[in-house]
Length: 78
Image (cartoon, rainbow, N blue to C red; front, side, top):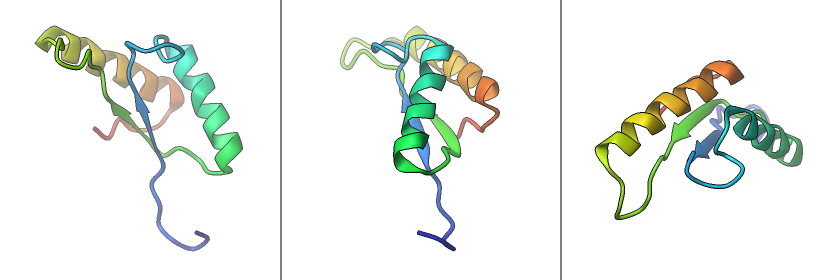
């Protein structure tokens, strides 16, 4: 992969274990980066409760994902 433009994105769902806090998401990011030996370049917010997801869940998930991106100093890409 050396020399190639590459995006490595972390998908987060704050409604799941280990990614329900900003700190938890940052710890997961560190673990992924260490194992993959790659740097995560952006965040994808995926807040959902499957079929039971409401508009409020999505809005709250967006705000949470934005907080994770800001704390990690990387962009929220989706």
